[in-house]
Image (cartoon, rainbow, N blue to C red):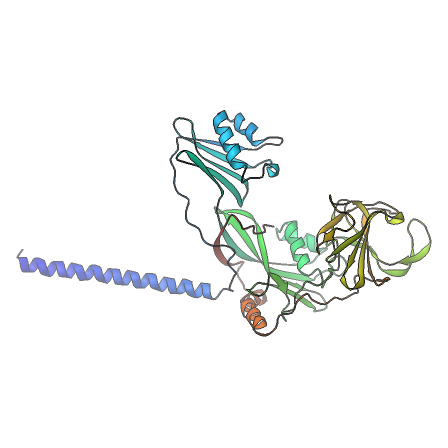
Length: 440
């Protein structure tokens, strides 16, 4: 072949390869455009934490894996797996400054990487899906830290009808109890699921599910919730956070769902006695006022403070048995009677926050069974706690309201749709050591 023909052949080959590269890049760019369009159509989601780099590789000769059993200490568990005393001491001493050993639980796991001489290269300890700690040898010293954890979040649509109770209906959808409480808590100041729930009411919500290494580890935040009553009344809660507003739930008009008082201190209690001026006492057999509501629940059920306040009484009081009384702004007081016990450290003068646990359901005093006697008082007069309305904690306005409506519009369209996919979007984030995302 002549040199001129070789040159021509090389040129043809060059331009052919160049054409393939351009086509490949164009095709890849088209895919990026499609993906970007799909992502852009999703509702904007607040990044919980920042992305992270992958963990550096390290060399090791052998691996010891263990799991804490009931009654184990970390040192004893390591000893059962024949980890040498020197390595056990290195692990315990280095982790003690980062990991609270009082919080160790059965089924916590650990991995110890050893070199050929049996010396520790690295130890990893997991006390929960996002509570991961490590000790890594660095020359003649060790570096201890709480590790970054990569999480995949998938937003799901969950919906259903009320057959008997909110709790039962959620369970039919494969949703755990903690999510039921979180859903009810969104509307705690607007709706009482103890007394106002009716058969064939319906609910819809968008909730995050968290996955670690492809394994489901728990539910995340409810992003949007809707509860529709038989009478046509619709309750909506949109999670919203901005530079000016802490994360909270708002209705479609930008009014915060949280108010100064929640309706019920026991979200899933059963109403057994209403507020009335004439009630036959079940034990004394006399007719007299019952200036509160009775909420039946199992012994030990947590009782929440209805509002921010201060403890003005804690102890035993006649027929109320063990009782807590809180004072609040505006001349209000709330009374919680028939408790089984009080939280450790609760005393007269203690300052409590709304929804903080201030006692546990019991049957102390004059009581026919475990329940909470809950009363609301203002300036000495008792009010029906289920018939009293309170103002929202905050109301969005102006540019903040416009931004709120813009950010929640996409989810609103999805929750309105009858053909929305089960999985609405997927995102990835990294849990930094200082972060503590709620996992339901």
